[in-house]
Length: 220
Image (tube, rainbow, N blue to C red; front, side):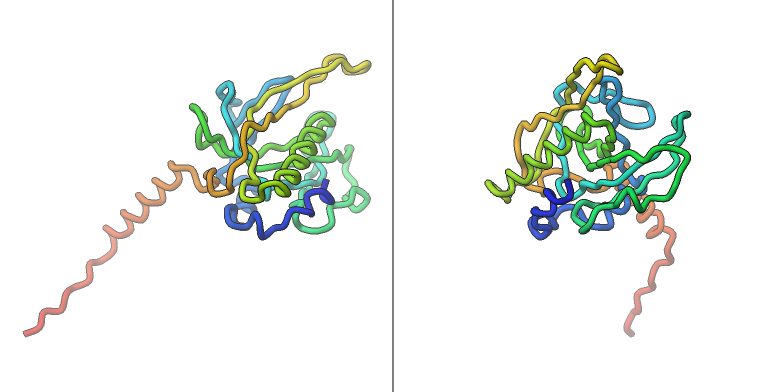
């Protein structure tokens, strides 16, 4: 994965998402988690189902890869992720020992650009084989697009699902992201949500009102 994405020139992508925003998102920030479970998509702590056919912008500079480990009771044992644009990937052999198995994981930042979910910013993480394959396919499409039209490197996708029968696990669901168009990086808003901006503006106004007024000097 990282070898493919390394062919993308960082200077072609650097105008939209600042490094500080990426670090903020990786640690939680204003981004909610976008989840795919048993064929269904949802986001946030309340597991909100995205509007059908809603469109989501996928930021090509935000792909990260690494590993995650869970216990048998689904307790998080460890997670180590790194940007795909930051050189060599994390090696599984160098991970610390945990009471569980390390699994490959890929993540990416997304924002909804249509419908009732417009403006929702989310981080999508996946470690299933079907999910890894789908994000790998999406990365391949981005690389192809960069060679054809580098001015619009950001895929706008719809969220769907597929399934197949597995000998051991029976019916297995896989996420699908269908590209409906390509956009310039400035066409999607990965900034702070409007509510957060309004709160900051209100705090600034209160601070200004509380500050002592400067006296004007009157010349005699």
